[in-house]
Structure formats: structure tokens, C-alpha cells
Length: 261
Ligand code: ADP
Ligand code: MG
Image (cartoon, rainbow, N blue to C red; front, side, top):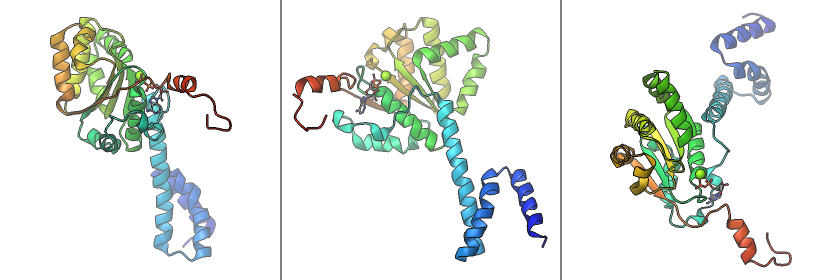
């Protein structure tokens, strides 16, 4: 056995070789605690490794969340289910487990503006990031321009392949802007490429019956919907816009003295 300083520098070298910086930070203070509290060697090793794994998981999640480019952070926990009485809680709880992403299944959220489609999409995306699934968020228009650029530069195949490393693609706001036939074809290729390979979560203000209007052609829209919903959970949200809810409620309810706002 070497001296204490020799051992410390050996550990320093080893944690760099292992690329485990957290161990580099915690081994010494944890060793002091272990001595004071009489931990076994096994307890000490478990404590050191546990800290490294926790840090690595937290870093991975943070990287996935920032890499997903969510427009805001919205969580499922912040979603008020009372405002969506028809939304099946068991279905949402199932989706929150992310097991559908492991199976490359899809989710479609339909409903009018302001009912929480984007909120739920982001919330499920954040769950995916926590569960270790690389995720990418963009609006349908955003995806359209990415695909158009790739196509124009002759690297559509490569781009579709690159997107495979994301286990979940979120395509928000399908239906707000219509696409021309060429762009509709690019969307079809994206959905076909991911069919049974990787998950897509789509939000739309348009029922499937009107997707022909969005994608220039009923046949292309039908082929897309077919692949999208073959293994999918389709949730329809309803009710009034949540955006104008507080204003409406304020107008309805006279402010009570000392009452809740
Ligand atoms: P949509 O995408 O359906 O148009 P959003 O998800 O953007 O609607 O929701 C509009 C706003 O209302 C957002 O700030 C969102 O966080 C909030 N919101 C909508 N529904 C709910 C809900 N049930 N609980 C909490 N916040 C909600
Ligand atoms: Mg939205």
C-alpha cells in the first residue's frame, strides 16, 4: 500500500481514465464519513457509485431536455385534469410511463386551440427525457422546413436516418398552416420512415377527416394517418380554451372579500 497522497493521486488518475468526475469529487469526503460512521467497504463503494450514477442520470436528462428544444417547460404534474373531464386519466397515466416509446408507438392529441395539446405534448416529452429517450420538439412548420432543406440539399435520406436517433419526435400544431403537395410528400416520408421504428407525438386542431386540407391531398393524408394511428393512442381534448379561462372566470365571479383569487 502506498502513502495516503500516493493513493489519492492514483484515484485521481483512475477517475479520469474512467471518466467518472463525480467519484473524483466524492470519494474523499465519503471516505471520511464512512470512517466516522463505521461503514463497511461495501457500503462505502455503493455510496460512491450511487452518487456517480445519480449525477450521470441527472446530466443525461438535462442534456436531453435542452436538446429537445421545447418552447417552454410544461409538466404533466402542472396539467389540471379537472379542466379536461373527458380525458381518460388512466390513459394519461399509462402514457406518462413512456412504455409506448419503448414500443415505437405514437400519440395524437386533437382538439381546438388552447385546450392544452402543446402542454401535454411537452409534458410527455419531458417524461421521455427523464426516462432516457432522446426527444426532439418542433412545430409542423419547423419540421417542414427542416425536411425541405434536407431534400433541397440532396440529403433527405441522411436526415431521416439521423432523426432515428430520437426515440420521440414531437410535431406540434399540425393544421394551422396548410402544406403544398411536395411538403406533404416529405411528411409522408418522415412518418413512413418512423413507422414501427420510432415514436411520433402529433398535436392538431383538425380532426383526421380534414387532414386532406392540410396535406394537399386526401390520399397522402390517408396514407399518413394510416401509419400514424396503426399503433397509437389518440386523445381528443375538448372544452373551452384554457388561455381565456381565467379572464372568463374573473368576469363571472364577483371578487369576494378575503376570497381566493
Ligand atoms: P393548445 O396547444 O391546445 O392550443 P396549450 O397547451 O398551448 O394549448 O395551452 C394554452 C395555455 O393554457 C398554456 O399556457 C397551457 O399551459 C395552459 N393549459 C391548457 N390546459 C391546461 C390544463 N388543463 N391545466 C393547466 N394548464 C393548462
Ligand atoms: Mg399548441
